[in-house]
Amino acid sequence: MSELRKITVEVSEHDLAEAQALTGKGVTETIRDALRRMRSIRAQQRAMELRGKVKFSLTLDEMRYDGE
Image (tube, rainbow, N blue to C red; front, side, top):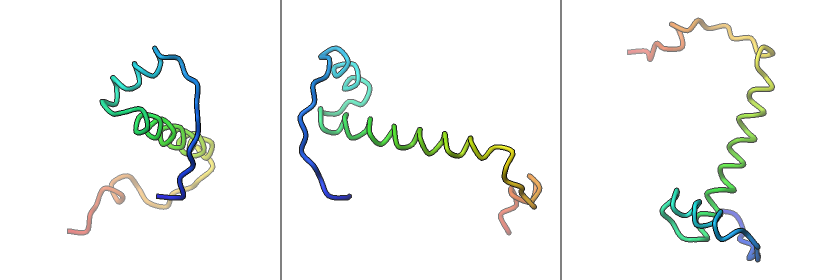
């Protein structure tokens, strides 16, 4: 884990309660999960931007083959 930074955030009680209900975790872990999810979504968006721009030399069957 990288260096931690302590912050103060104002959020709707309702939004926080719903998010905590979804994660089943406390405030800090719920916020960390949300930030990780945002990072993941951005990575997915970047991957989607590459759609049709990357050429694969393997067929689907070749990618499925595990060498055994």
